[in-house]
Amino acid sequence: MTIETPDRWRAFAAERRPSARVPLAMTDGGNTEFTPWQRGGDSVDRAVLATRRAVFPLHGLDPDDPRD
Image 1: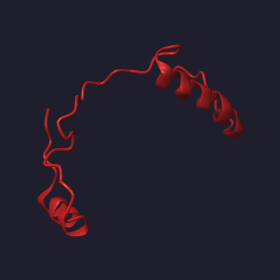
Image 2 (image 1 turned 180 degrees about the vertical axis):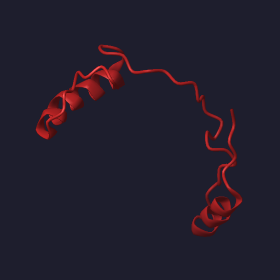
Image 3 (image 1 turned 60 degrees about the horizontal axis):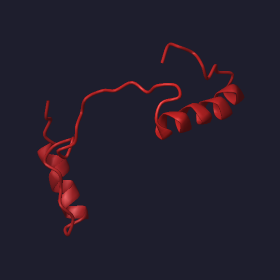
Image 4 (image 1 turned 90 degrees about the horizontal axis):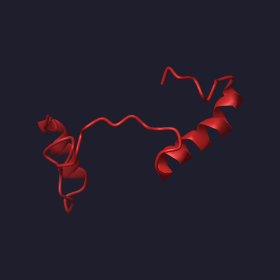
């Protein structure tokens, strides 16, 4: 599903960055298929889990909570 960027936003972006290419779609041509992160998956997934384990307990949260 492709969602176009709003006309007002494109005008604003073009005004602020006249030399930049303003995207016409929210995805800018990228893949929008949702893939849930996996424990022990790729390097990004491992970094997310390491960050959760380091930060979540400081806020009283469970880094291994299955609800997210």
